[in-house]
Image (cartoon, rainbow, N blue to C red; front, side, top):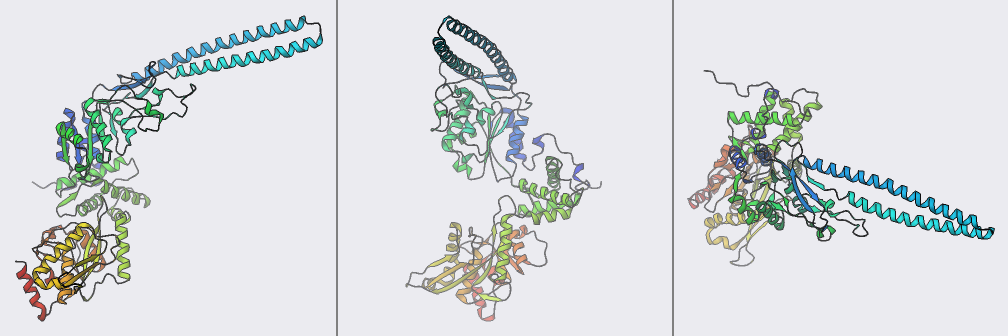
Length: 635
């Protein structure tokens, strides 16, 4: 039977995008299984993983498949006995609008009727007063007395009008306040088909837990009633649904404790969260907040999340570590194609569909982003960025469908800041001959590094390293001096490198200071992937053996001389090739991770330090004994 053709479509328009969010999640099979169980039983979930791997999407899927409860609306009523303690009532979804509409109509009708009555009474009183004044004036015989009565009557009329106006204004104010005694809708779930999904990522304390607005007019009856200043928090809006919080560990410890209280009691009073606000005087009756928490974060979250909150999740839910890569199989390549189709549909016409060849190019980019051979990245937010930029380029060129060239150009155009900086650094260093790719030099090595770029591909960088061995300033007090904005791990790696040198030179090393310089590393150095480069530069300076400058090195070195695997190998090799390097020495265990189809650069795997210097040094007959001695030392 013939094998089915891979990517059996001409364009992504032929790919059917699943209707349910749970079926749109790519590469998180274990997470999907747990989310289905948790949704059925309404369990809390903690998702840990790198950004852009689908944590929020799983949270939305949870809300979509959660069995629908009888949703409710939440109302806040004034408390006539204690204005600063508003009453909270929960009613079936859709009824809050009707309640408020009915009460507001009654209030307006009553107010309109009383307004007409007041106007009639005011007109009648003024008419009677005017009649009395005219009668008094008419009884006077003297014109002077008549004028005096007229003036007195007018002043009396004005005084009466002023008094009646004040009475009327006070009455209107009280009636206005009575209109404001209509309850306020805090949560309205009218016409909702699914359980609420509330994303509270980055929410401040008041937005998360509820707040009471400040009222600058707190006296004279001009202030806004307390119940009207109450604002529901995300926890209340998520009642009967799902509350999603990414980077949950960034919440203040007090907020995490309040969140835990809300989870336990399924209700939490709303109060002003600012001590300087008049809202701090107001505290409602407990408001319902029966939600399921989907918390997310990176690996550091595990140590920073409040122990009691994590214990609650562990005891009443699940913890999931998100995959950041998946095997490069036919089935998973089909999933990447599905992902592209989903992104096109989500972009609502802004991005054209992709041709089959363009999809293959995106899959190739997914391989590069994984940085491991036989793997595809699951940092799909970053991959989605490539899809959208390719769509923009296709639109600009008037293409109905995105082509492979559009994708290739999008990768160049949408390079991360780190990639742009790396290119700039490399060009400047080559221009001023800081990076040298020809000849041989003593104590100078081309190391390789990666500028991290968040979710996207890191950017490789050629990093020249120089070493010089000089007589110690004080007898028996040799020093290792390393400069170049080194991080803690990099400093420790430099110290470990000297273990090999000490084994090789014995006590003689105590008579020398070792100076190591990472040239022009304005971006800083962290990690131990430059270990073999440092060791090579130091040994070269000690023995005055030149290093080939068309060779670059990357790899971690153990104190026993083993070359250990490092990350970002493909990215580093690509940077070396672009800089004009002819050969790159990599750890043997990383050989399979190099994904560069280029004849410009030779890849040389090394298992130990002897194999590194065997390829990096420019040997002569006179100094071959150094290699033999190193081989004996690392056995």
